[in-house]
Image (cartoon, rainbow, N blue to C red; front, side):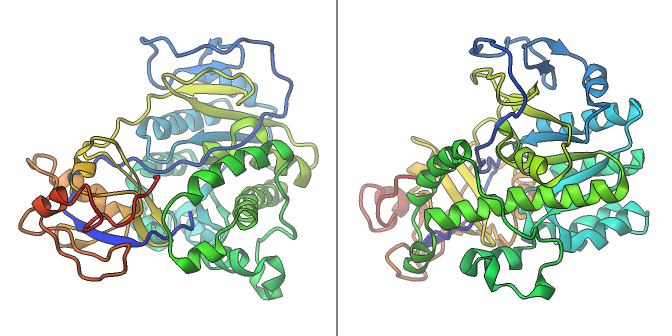
Length: 415
């Protein structure tokens, strides 16, 4: 989050979207001495759950282990439908076991808690929740993926709780720090931001190096540095832990927290902040396990198997950053690379529809599922380039022909 690329193009997209993931985090409890296992069994059904000893367990067993927990943290890849199905099933299992949790959401800022309260009370229907939360503006990832778990929470009587920091405050803190805020702006902000421990700092520094290689404007390069990156990452972790602890103490009930896996893995993110902000809380962590990924028992108390989302047909990896649909990566030898696209481009249109949120791309891909090509030669890319020239409108053949030079692509990007 927070990187603005330098050029923009318009595309008619036949999409399967893969989105940028953060990494990070650490389990606080002692871990057994179990050697890593290279990959899950090929026959492993999606949604299968394993404990830290690599023993397959049922959702009922998971819920039984969660009975004494104050917090159950479930990590996710935001664009993986299997992850969201597991979260839905896990929530049902917890309630069936007699647990009455709240459901804390990384995806919603605490400034929208009144909207969630209206939904919790039955005053706001699910089909109006996305609009009222301004979901696309704040979160960007497809609301459709989250609908089932939000609907299941309502059916189970599980209240939804907003955990994250509002975007306007996030931007102010990024530029001025906590000291620049007025008292009446603070709201549910934590009184101080808890910095990362040394292990999380190492992980975040690696993540920062990946970010810093992406193209950005001169102004962005001036303001984007390691300390600000660590500040915002720590703000998110501290904010979510603070809001969760505040709710749990007031409600006297446990909380299930849905967040990106980087905030859950290894216990460095949300879990560590919870131990500092709450009174000796009991925490159960659950994160995804992917094919081809070593099974590290230190990553979480439990792991659920969900296959990785297949690469998009076009070879585009798209993320919503600073109110823009950004190409985080273009896969080598993909159709997108052959068309002259590169990491750092911004999608302006899907057909004739402005891309003002990722749901536009999701719907465009659904509507054009049977299209024979991803680009419309009659409506070629349009946008601004890295070199600052505006209103570039090359045809697709021209973009491919210029692939070896800078005419359309701009400077090379390591992304």
